[in-house]
Structure formats: structure tokens, C-alpha cells
Length: 319
Image 1: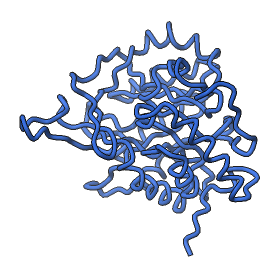
Image 2: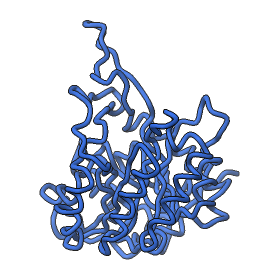
Image 3: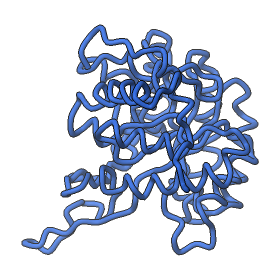
Image 4: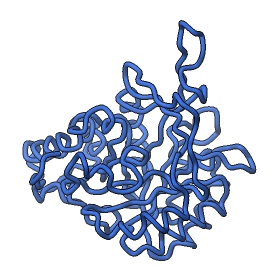
């Protein structure tokens, strides 16, 4: 992202009261633990960065190989590799105030107590704008993802919400509710009812690759998460469902994530109902993508005769 580019005011937006220079964010797990990406791109045109998910204990993650490319995206089983909460508090938290864009802390855990401990530590850092809860983690007690079970999700969110009086709470849901009796709208409704300030839709899609020569799984972990262009149309639908059936009425912003590699992808998300858009796997493919997306959205707004990009949220014409 070349130096000196400033998006036009029409791209400025607000995410639950957090002022964004543009609606484009870097997604969790793709932008380091804080501002490492500033070495290779100008962060100032971005709306913000979502950090790597932090867990209570340090994690080395899964064995290698843990990333592979497919024809339409990326499979990863990184396994939440991160320095852990103590290192985050001592080494990373003090630097947040100096970063030139909004920082959203991502939280992961195996139990409600894990989430509460990490979220409350993040809440104590004044410069941290928001917390994104990764609820696609298996609960050690049930084995189910917190985000797949409305009752577990409700218990988790009530506990976390009570522990973060100062910080906005975004809940990152899983795209897969197939095989459960619950829809993405059911789970989003639980999040909103429990006081979520916003929803991130969605996490990666569970997937697998096999090496046909060795007949072994490509990833050491056997399965991983699919991201990239293949999941984009899937996520557009989920954003549309949640916006049209829930958040349009509750005024809860959606942050869309899934396969954005060009500005048109981000524009689709906004028309479907998203207030902001995260870029994840695209950062690995081409570091110029975030800047190109911001510039493309700017021109699109002008062509749509929109004074603000917020005028285009949810404006898909269905009839």
C-alpha cells in the first residue's frame, strides 16, 4: 500500500461508534499480533486490524504443513498459534496506542473462563477499540463449537459481556450450521440478544485436501479451514440472510469476511448488508489487494452517486 494515499471522506464509516477511515479491515490470523503489516503496507487507509486470536496459554499451533493453496483459495490448519495472554499483556498491549489505525483484539478459548480472562485483560487496555470473539473454538466440556450451540453461545456471551464494560464486542460466527437444527440467523440473534455490538460473518469453512500421489492428507492436521474466493458467494448469502432477517431491524453492524480479492467482492458484501469488510487470505496472495479494494470502493461510490458508502449498505435490489 503506497505511502500517502488517503481515502475520500465518502468512505468514512462508523462501526458501533468506532470511526473508520474506510470500511476495510485486515482479518484475524492474517495480519500478525499487532502492526507487523506496517512493514509492507501503509495502514492509514484501513479501517483497522483484527489481531491474531489470543489464547490464555501460548500456542505453537498445529504441525507443518498447515497451509496449502487450492484453485480457489487457501486451506489452513494453523491452530491459533500465538504468544499467549501474559506475553500479550507485557509485550503487545503497551504498543497498541502507537498504531495508526484501529486495533480489534481477537479472543479464543476452550472454556468460558478462558474467554473471560482474555477479554477482561483486553478491556483494561484503553487504546483497544473492540474485541472480536472467535466462537468457532471447540468447548473442552462438550466438544461442540461454542458458536454451533445457542445455549453454550448464550452462556459464553453473557459472561464475556459482563466482563468488558469499556470495550465493544463483536462476535465472529462460523459459516456452517448444516447438520445442526440452528440457522446462522438463530445464532446471530443469540449474539445480538446477549449484547453484541456487531457480528463478523464468517469464519473459514471446514475443508480437506488429499495428495493423490502419497494418498495422505495434505495438511498434517487432516482437516483445516477453507478461505479465499471459493467461499465468497457463500458468505454473501449469509450476510444477506442475517441483515434482512435480523440486523436491519436491530441496527447491529455486520463485518463481512470471506474471499475478498477485488473491490467488487467488498461492494457485494456492502450491498448484502455489511457495514465493514475484512480481507484475510487475500493478504497472503497479494499485499496490494487492500489498497486496490479501498480505491475501487471509492470510485464505485462516486459512480453510484452515493455521498457516503453507508448509503449503499443493504441496498441490493431484489425486485
